[in-house]
Amino acid sequence: MSFTSSRVWALQQVFRGIKNAKGVFFLALMLASLSLTIPVFVASVLYSLSEPIRAIPVAPEITVFTYQNLSKAQLDNLRERIGRHEHVMKITTIPKDEAFKSLNENLGIKQNQDNASNPLPDLIIVTLDTHMPAADIERTAKNIEKLKGVSLVAYDSTWLTKLDAISHAITNLGWIFVAITLSLIVCVIAASVRLAADTQKTELNMLYLFGATPSFSIRPYAWRGFLTMGLAAVIAIGLSSFATGFLNEALLTVGEQYGTSIAITPLPWEFNAGFIAFCALLGSLIASIITQRAIAKIERFA
Image (cartoon, rainbow, N blue to C red):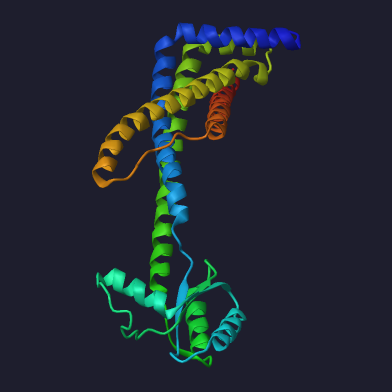
């Protein structure tokens, strides 16, 4: 056969195989769709939460309490000396009056006297590198505390260790989830291709006897796997969109009770297009491997 005619034949075989084994094809399609809906829905939730999570400040900070009698020049000089330390990303000065006002507001104290005594000094907030180890944070804090004009420093790096542990656990759970989902998809496609191959075993035997190349025999099954997983990905995205829309109605009611807006946004079209392409190629690869093994079995017993 020519290049064009061989591919036209393969395309005809794809739809003929689907017609002859409708039950197997649609069962595989539905199982794959439901399997893919789970990661798509989880990805939608994570994508919606990613923006507010990224907005949470996770960089470690050191609060520097200065002496009460520091002048502006001395305070500026202290800021400069603090900035010379390694891993210092940002320095923010909070005047003592502003710090005192903020403290009263947080404690719910109403201060009406203009001449009220302010026991707080000027504060310097030192923001460090996000990926800075806890030992380096402690060492930097001790070095800053030794500087002239510093009364004491306050910091807490234990939450970073806890955050790293939680992130590590979530990452491991994510990889386990991906592995289980991929395994389920592989099983679904492998089972459907094996059933289709068994159904058309006579056809594979005839192709082998007539001297058809393995690529010629595999092509219809590879294309069918491509079509199955591509359609399954499209259906999964549709089911996920329906589920997120249904969930958004409930979240809207909850948000109104707390005076906020909560919504799960759909995934960008670039992700959806890439997901469909990946699933289709994965289906084609799995189908090719299974069919190749079926042909190899025929060759062994020929």
